[in-house]
Length: 340
Length: 281
Image 1 (cartoon, each protein chain N blue to C red):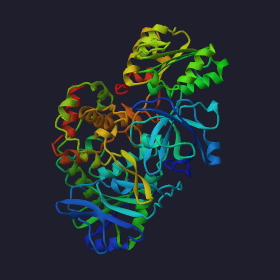
Image 2: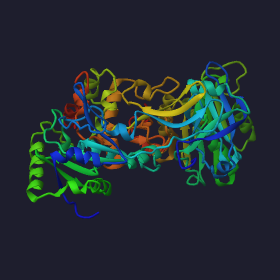
Image 3: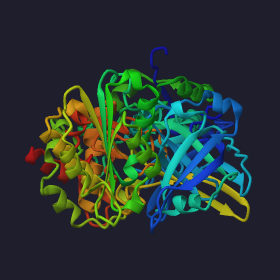
Image 4: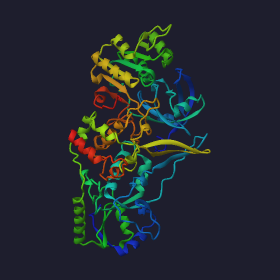
């Protein structure tokens, strides 16, 4: 990898730039009602960059909510794996979500490679979009990220007003820019300085924070602390906090048949569901929402740290923004800290 | 692993089945062989390991392999009928096909235990993962000082591997103590709970490894009693079973605190487990 050189793309050339991306399906933020989703971009269509973050994290494109593991016919034993092919570019991924993909990859490579995840991950080029305006509950800078962090991204874009600053970070990112070389100009130092300033100003506007020092080691000591019951009392067990979390990766494996055509599939699951850990005997090691809430927080802020050396939370704020009963991870962590 | 894809199972054929117990939740044992010759060749498991057993069209569940590799070129699973997959499995007979992937997890460190006395303390279906230890030690009898089996169930009809264990008791070389929670006419052995039987047997901790498996409540009291008998944490092992879906450390659900039962276990020494508060939940 050579030195990172920043390039400049003026906004009038933006549609043309998108047209140059060939042979890869393009996913970009698109507004549907009052939500923004990472959705396929049709020819001539422009991404909607006026958003804080997509409702569903981009994990859904490398770790689909439902994914066929193999197909078979009922009564037969031949199992056919699906072909995983087709390159894609994910455009406008927020830096927190890029970090999340990098973080989760540690698990999918742990000891045994997960071929489904790794194949899909290898097929996508992740183009990040630096944040200029943090969301209400963003706290990326507390957990190792930032408005312009680059981990997990192949290319980072920053909106400079009249133009985009493009910083390729990997070979995939450089390959993408090579397709549109003639539209790009080398970025002057002022443009890079402007980007640094945008990122710094965005970071300064982040309102929420968590002091994580001591939490990974300390959480197991709070096993019987009343705080878990306090926070779980309001929980509906809906699973939104986990389904829409960019680092949550838990799944179930099920069989499904239509006529004689059948498949074994994996599907997102949630540690907030009662059935998730319930044994066939009826015994459940996490019988109430208290234990499940404690596991959700402990997994991200303690167990994952012990296993993989990093907190499995990128501070995107989705679980706080989207919880129907306002359970607030940042507040839980503040109370954890207080109880330590 | 099949075709480099750890999720893709082998197909296997059931060679023989029999019921271990009756009642509402009967336990049925399946003796199976993998269909593919190359798979049979490459398969190797150790006492304590698990495998994902499935039925195409129904689903997969994790079971401990209830035989020792010293017994022959086959696998055994002793399955209690409890849920969807186990109910479907119970309908199968010799000649039927299942899917198998694995083996998963760590195993009992039987080489480390050479030169020691082995004590197993089991309850109910919890004897299934202990059975491979018994068979392994019997096959390598000269390497171990002795073997004591303590095993109990709710009633005489709930004892798994009963014939085998009674035969073992008669062998003389191996100490075998059986119990039932509720006494019945003609029952010649102990009546009471397994932890009490353990105290009755009163095994010496000297140069001994104790392995226990059973219902969570039984394990808790057995651990307590082993400590009372003077066993050190490092001399006590157990094997855990939690709900699992992948067996590969990915799907998330089998963790007890920071330990993944499928990867860090299922076999744990009490020295490790005592710091994992969720282990006996």
